[in-house]
Image (cartoon, helix red, strand yellow):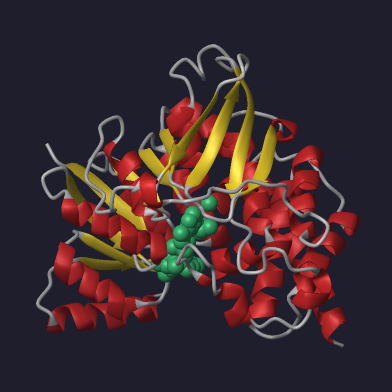
Length: 393
Ligand code: NAD
Ligand code: MG
């Protein structure tokens, strides 16, 4: 029996890699629905190729354009719009797998809906977990959803964890090492990064990704969000999660055990590996990625990460230590600051300045409900947007 898959954010970088892996395994998976924000031309091409039952976009006017395009292509995929319609599709009992690959806070509601309905959820959208980690992990336990990480570091850790990890507490695990390539500005100092442009910041040396995660990789906020993501996924405090600089992006993360053993997962830097692992789990399926040629790798380097010149990493650790809605607020401030940088309103170094301002002024509270998450998100956005305006003036 083929499994029915929904891909949230199918027109993005992770979405594209997911469709590639699914296309290589037609006997195992069937696409039930694809979703995106506004790139209806690309979504129409994907519908023509994969023939999902539904295509979901954010706005009614995009849905109209998509419908017209699909008519021209004689494609019978049904078009719907809005987050509520998307959540309804996710809750359908015939949906087996949901790939959560929307970028940013927009992914929160659909990802949570998929978890609450007990689906196998392949999580790329780290922002939703950072915003609402306790809610999501509780919902997964209550609704019997399986969350499988496809962020490469977390997928690597998942592959290395002992089978008895969740049942016995830690299964001998003492520490996690998350690898960080260091992004395009590895080895730079704050002075040197002062005038960098969005296109320089998006030019990641090892991975081809969407704009927002590329900027996050350049500031190291991506690694900070990933530390928080790992802490929720694997139920460990962040003082047991370290970041290791590894410029080659071949070793994707490692698990340290009480007896001194360290298990790591290696592979070429291509997101189709973690996606194929999670799609096929517990089996292994074809990903389309070349085998790793260990003889030609040469040197693999590991060193300390620089959180003085990359303060976002330190701020993320701080948010995790504070707990409650601090990670939610940190994420909101970062989204506001990254958008302001991409719109040339603030400089690259001012991204961390906006987030630091938020962390120093925001009054933190508990995170008990989805409403509390959304309230914290809005409050932090408004403080951060005001800070951006102040910097501009
Ligand atoms: P991307 O920008 O390439 O794609 C984002 C997708 O989300 C698009 O399909 C877009 O239409 C959709 N989207 C954006 N705003 C939306 C909205 N308001 N409502 C509905 N859909 C919306 O991003 P990406 O690089 O594919 O990253 C997606 C997620 O995966 C991010 O959370 C990122 O941190 C995470 N991630 C990405 C990579 C990578 O290699 N690209 C690796 C690990 C984790
Ligand atoms: Mg990652």
